[in-house]
Every structure is written in structure tokens, then in C-alpha cells.
Image (cartoon, rainbow, N blue to C red; front, side, top):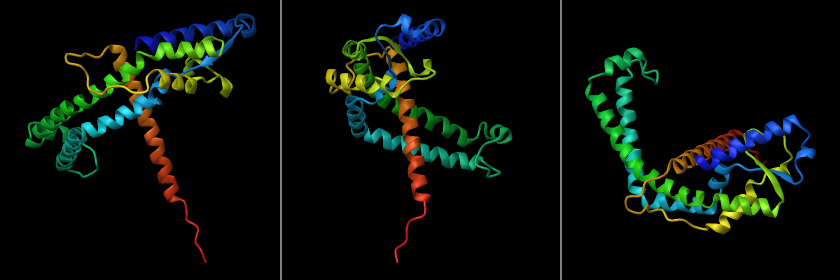
Length: 226
């Protein structure tokens, strides 16, 4: 995405400059660290929009789940050695079978349904992304920040340097809500698609961590009363 790419590029140049000369001699203000995708993902507008999309597209989501279950059943039929995966021999044997044809149809139908959902999500993210630069500038001015770095451009920092939460607050103020229905003939930009993909990755990692934590808690021995 263009916006984040510019931020990352600037971060790389800034990191190189800091490595070459003492920071105090180069920077008279603060150095801030901001994750643009994390800020967008954490906004109230994004969370609310995703909830609305889950409701609006509940039928499509249910159909996708059903098709995934059907596909799993077909794959089990092709898994002749029952090891839970299709090896090379099983894949070759599966070619031109009725199951393979059905799997292709299910994949195509699932992709069409997913495209409707993703289009709404990309549109929601795009509206937040359009306000990101202005929100960042607000935080920069309020905190006398001279350099903004992305997290992956920093080897070490104190927690106070992370301004992502402040940018989230600024975004919430600028764009408290967004629309989930794209206008007719709307086409997402590459920047919006890139931002959406990064947001999705962040949400997937967060969901996986929550699931792991819940499983760990369930496995812990429960205290017994007398």
C-alpha cells in the first residue's frame, strides 16, 4: 500500500541515519513508533463495520461454511490411506474423478461468495485509510514528533515511544463510523487492498492467540473444594 510503503521507506532511511550519527545531534523532538495496519485494525469504525458485515452477509458466510464442509468430505474420500492429507500419488489418482470436479466447483462458488464479503471489508478499511495521514499528523503535532518509524525498523525502544494507540484515538475522532456498501462501479485501490490484507493478518494472529490462550486455560487443573 502506497501510504504504508512511504512510511516504511522513511523509517528505513531514518534508522540508517540514526545508526550513522548520534540521535541527539540529529533530532530535536521526539521519535514515535506507529504501526499503520495495527492502528486501522484497532479502530472502532473497523470493528463496527466488520460486525455489520457479518450480519449483512450472514447467508453468504453460512453458504461458505457449508461448502467447506462438503469439500472436506470429498477430500476424505480421496485420502485413501487416511493420513489426513493427499500425497502425490493420491493427487494423481484424484485427477478426472467426480470428486475433483465437485471440489473445483465448490472452490469457485466459495470464492465468489467470499469476494462479496471481502469487497465490503476493503471498502470499510479504505475509508479509514483515507483519514490515516491526517490522524497521524495530528498526533505528530501534539507530541512534537520529528521522526515516525514503523515497528520493524526499530531495534529497541521504550514503551512510551509507541504512538499507535494515540493514532487509533485520532482515527476514532476523525472517522467514528464507515459505510459497508460500496457505491456502484467502485473499484478498490491497490493501497486499500494492501491495507486490508495487513489488517486481516493482524486479526488472524490475534484470533489465534486468543484461541491458544483459551485452550491453555481449559487445560489448567481446576481447584477442587472440600
